[in-house]
Length: 120
Image (cartoon, rainbow, N blue to C red; front, side, top):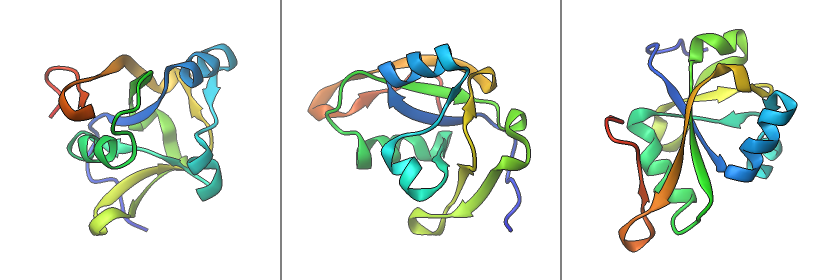
């Protein structure tokens, strides 16, 4: 099983309404795709823009949730996915307490999302 390559923040893109529900419940169970695949799909800072472009172009009402991977413990696995890159996959619900910050993902030109300043 691949190890965690680093301790930087990892990210989840989800509808604002779903994250609001997660805050009320204390955790995020995942999207329909996450539930189908059996884990919550997350991305590193280097991967999250491509994830947004591939799966979320033109979609409004989204948030970017920054997550501390250390808070996820053994339920976080780094596994090969798109192009053989190691992606963080969370086997279980995402605890709201593991989030470091949440930012709206507005749309810019051509339906591309505008990410917070300073995100690698």
